[in-house]
Image (cartoon, rainbow over all chains, first blue to last red):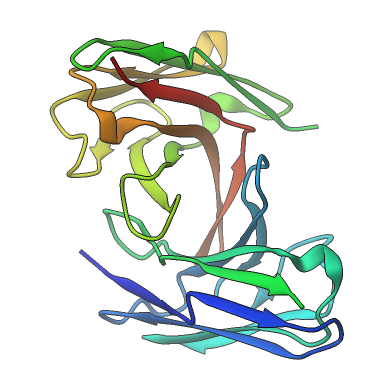
Length: 107
Length: 124
């Protein structure tokens, strides 16, 4: 099984800060990686697919990069509504797996 | 507008069974694969996300997470535009919100669309 390791698991940042989340895969997954935003009581919201493609309607302050085993999600200017937990997901091979999540707190 | 509406979640005792349903609308349901994903306290940090099951468009391929294989069964009725998950021999660690997910195949990628989820609580 492909393991995804996210770091950090928790971060506290101020509005307008630049935030970076890392996702490492235990084996190469090309660009079969997605990023989701998960708020309490809501379904996961797709932010990024194919490792770096911004999903329709997602604010441009979200961006991502990576290929193979190292992936990064960046929020260039953190906003209050970005309070959430963020997950990476690999769609390369079954069983499909998610990272453990990164919970963002707004200072 | 694409809609995926899950139902069937409830409080159930350990060892019992439950069937979840997902009613799809707004797209050609019979033309794509579907998944079940859950978010519960059973794995990892707090309430992590866990892929549960996959079924392809004509039900010829069904795949399961190791944690549910042999206990859960996925099936679909393309005529009714519905996806189902039968949960058997339920355990406390199966407590979770269960999401129905539509898979869209792109060029070198997959895009997932999610329902709002249905809560399953396994407890005596």
